[in-house]
Amino acid sequence: MAFVNYSLHRLTFYQELHAHLTGSIRRQALHKIWFNRRVHDAMYTLEDPLIAMPEGAAVDMESFFPLFNSYVYKLCNTVDTVKFCTNSVLEEFANDGVIYFELRTTPRDDKKTGMTKEDYVEAILDSIREFEGGKIGQKTGMKTKLILSIDRRDTDATATHVLDLAILYKSRGVVGLDLAGDPLVGDINSFRPIFAKAKEMGFGITLHFAEAELTSSDEELNILLAFHPDRLSHVVYTSDVIKRLIQRLKYTLEMVISGNIQTRVDPRIRVHRDHHFKYWYPEKTNPIAICTDDVGIFNSKLSNEYYLLFKHFGLLKPELFELASGICDSIFSTKSQKENLKQQFEAFREKEEIEPGKVL
Ligand SMILES: CNc1ncnc2c1ncn2[C@@H]1O[C@H](COP(=O)(O)O)[C@@H](O)[C@H]1O
Image 1 (tube, helix red, strand yellow):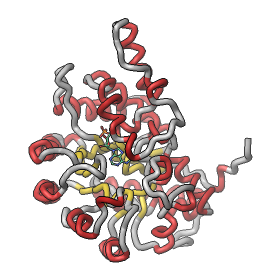
Image 2 (image 1 turned 90 degrees about the vertical axis):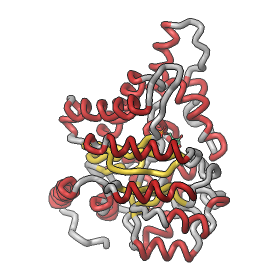
Image 3 (image 1 turned 180 degrees about the vertical axis):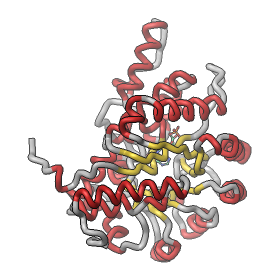
């Protein structure tokens, strides 16, 4: 095994701002649910996730999105399974060194089991509360907030319901609204008033942005920018005009390195070094949040994503530190939470003797 000098790149802690709950569930956790069902029902026909979704199997933008509807949602479709999966995801991120976590998910119901969207969101919020009070939560101190996703294929009524749920559960830790889903699907035009209202209500706005070439014309991207986002994710297909706008408005960019490569989001990105991080990072115009997106599928933890920046882009610890600590003001949580995170990073900087402002 190659020698890896962790002291060159390993930070003690991280902030994860872009992780989809269902995409973050490990196959092993899904397998446990499947096994339990199989034990109680010999006629249970759904295939074992370890076989249906083998680790390392190629997944592209066409095969990625159907995975959820046609498979994972059928396994994770009761309050108990949602809680079990949420807990397993929280454990993994906390154990990886994440101290602040914004988890996102699309509210979902299941007619067969009777789970409502309210049940679903409550199950996740209950799991977060229980996790924070439990052993690993106490030991690691990880704080978790929830972002609700509107799927691009949603009807206006469904999307409005997502906002209603966000408002209903705001006091319990819902901090933002996201636009996600297959970038080739749906008409986003009509969502504008929903995001406008969310903004008015004090929610943070994050949008999947320029993830597919076909839906990344300047016209479409300008519609999305009119939603007044705070953060943009992926940001793959941007013209110079849009890029300059993004730089001027200083949106935080949620960048996904492994996921973009594995889904072959852009034929120009074949290996890590091709990733558009290389264009955005040196300009230092926008805060960049390094994110995992769907660790259950892409199998690359947040600490590993930082390691990849070290390995493929030559970023050393002070630069990685500047990236990780540079997004404290980009979180959707309170001012005091931001201050708390800044203090933790500052303490780390002192302990590690990283010179302030050395890299920027
Ligand atoms: C690869 N890049 C991506 N681009 C866009 N949307 C994505 C995504 N990865 C995941 N999702 C969105 O998250 C849902 C699964 O988690 P939740 O059920 O919401 O927890 C997917 O159905 C998709 O809508």
